[in-house]
Structures are given as C-alpha cells and as structure tokens.
Length: 75
Image (tube, one colour):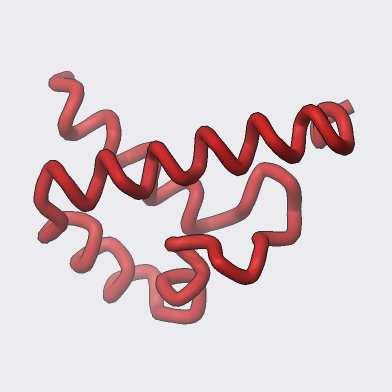
C-alpha cells in the first residue's frame, strides 16, 4: 500500500476518534467528526497532498504536546 493511501487511512481513523478521547477546539478534524462516515470519507478521499500533510502535522504536534502534558492516553 502506498504512503498517500496510508496517510488518508490514518486520517479516517483519527476522524473516528481522537487518541486523547476529546479533541481540542482547533482540531482540523473536528468539523469532519460531525459528518456521516460516508461524507467524511469522501472529503478525505478528495484531499490533496498538502491538506493531508497539514492535518497529520497538526495531529502529531498536538499529540506530542498532550502526551507531554498528560501522559499516554492508552495507559
């Protein structure tokens, strides 16, 4: 499977649930979480590489910041 597809699959998983259970107010996926699964998937499938990179970059930064502040959400 190619990296572009993997990244979109990752975003689709993040839409289903934030790893920290509660998304921050400025989460770029917050709006998509309110849409139907079909609509959210369509939007992600139509994203260009720049949009995908921006979302994943924001996610990584947020996750690292919250991990540092609160610890691992899975534990």
